[in-house]
Amino acid sequence: MIARGLRTFGGIRTESSDWPIVVTTFPEGRVGDEDLREMLHHLEDLMRDAESRRERIFLITDITQMRQLTPASQRKLTADWMKHTFSLGKVASVGAAHVTPSAILRGIITAVSWVQPPPNPSVCVASVEEAYERGIAALTAAGQLIPPPVLQRARKAV
Image 1 (cartoon, rainbow, N blue to C red):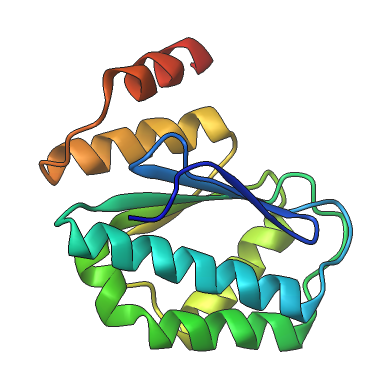
Image 2 (cartoon, one colour; image 1 turned 30 degrees about the vertical axis):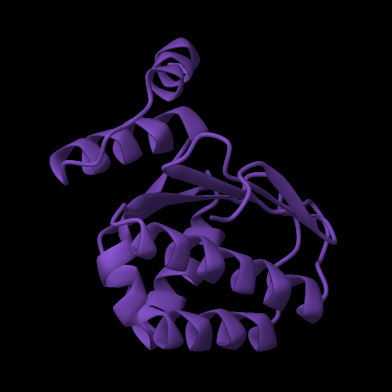
């Protein structure tokens, strides 16, 4: 089992304390390719852990702080990773939410999804609270147990 908690990759933060919800937050500025690659490997490890335990997770990507567009090389890196982990995502995840009020960033997410469609439903939402609501609904519909502290935190955030 992979230890739950906060991991940082350059400016990227991945928080898995609210398992089975995993939140990745991107910083305001650009991140290095290697930091992005390491974070994606960590997400893959979390998905493999969920698969081995016959659990499913919901991924939240919070890009509300981003002020610079992601370079094409990183969009390709992400699309390649999505292709590589597609089958794993089908069994280890129930979906994802991308948090951004920016139409430009929603467009980039859509473009990456055209290159490599996600294995499960993926939505853009305006807040982390809404992302949690979507995640809890998707996890509940899939029969995944959600610990009471996660439900309580989500209710307080709404």
